[in-house]
Image (cartoon, rainbow, N blue to C red; front, side, top):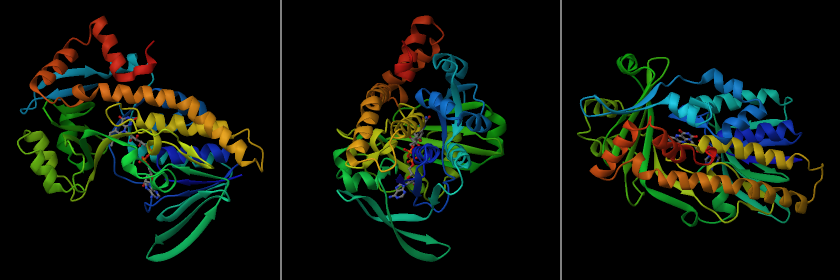
Length: 399
Ligand SMILES: Cc1cc2nc3c(=O)[nH]c(=O)nc-3n(C[C@H](O)[C@H](O)[C@H](O)COP(=O)(O)OP(=O)(O)OC[C@H]3O[C@@H](n4cnc5c(N)ncnc54)[C@H](O)[C@@H]3O)c2cc1C
């Protein structure tokens, strides 16, 4: 059996590996020239942690994990106003919590392709789909490649097309319809980039630092090698700002305090900058095309589980496809895709609800909301509050 996976992010790479291990021939079509180096620090817990353990990815993730002691909210002078201990977070998550840099997870997933017999999974970097189809004759992708100045075109046909190309999925647009039908913006944008500033590293090592501010927030985490991962969240009610430019971000965050402004000074010209949104679709598969990861199930950074669900959903898809015999019919494939959707959708919907509920504590819109977050965190050691926080952060994990 053959599959084309569009997108070599976390979901696409896990699906490719698991299908490869199940004996499928897999082509992965990725428009970036190589694994993307840009990114942010992520909490990794919940279903993806369990799935990573089951499929044997966990040891590779553990190797790259960072130690985070606490998330500290700071005022404009850098003084801590509220703190959330990661020990408590880990306890809430059943002791299964990792802090991972997004590009490190992607590299771990690429390395994990070594577990698949050689040649069974082919990665096509620098490959942009120009035509995507999934008609009665079967799915296919025509793509152009541009590597080292050489342009080429290639067409692939397969038994299955997997759209793993993120929140602005081209597979979803080609097979299911325009993005506006499925994207649920949450009134914010987010930007992220990595800078080199050894002084920050010394000052904040082991702590996730966040400004305790209304409508905009700068976060930072210092990395092992003198670099710092910065991430910004800001209110943007129409969610439609033009592509991120340093100047626009610097204007938006002017006056946030010396630490935030210092990070903005180091912002590259065109950092990652996108709408904060969820994806909600009535159907995740059509014919022999199926979506995984953010393309169909984005929960947003407010839920803090997008990467985790990307791993678990992709592993589940491969699981339901594994029993299919060589030459399986369209009907058998579609039944398996339906099984994946039936099993997985309730978990995604519950996590999306967790994300929406977290909006006001994630980015307060008023002083009252900001004070409410501060007091919730200050009281977080108490048993009752602990349970409320747990439900807010991890949702389904809590009985
Ligand atoms: C600031 C921020 C913080 C976050 N924090 C957390 C967190 O703490 N915990 C957590 O679990 N999650 C977090 N997330 C969410 C998490 O990063 C995503 O949910 C996860 O990366 C989704 O993985 P994916 O593989 O589905 O999509 P993506 O990572 O978006 O990968 C999609 C891939 O497809 C490629 N692609 C796109 N279009 C095309 C095309 N047309 N043709 C070919 N290739 C294409 C892209 O280049 C990319 O490689 C955060 C997200 C953000 C933005």
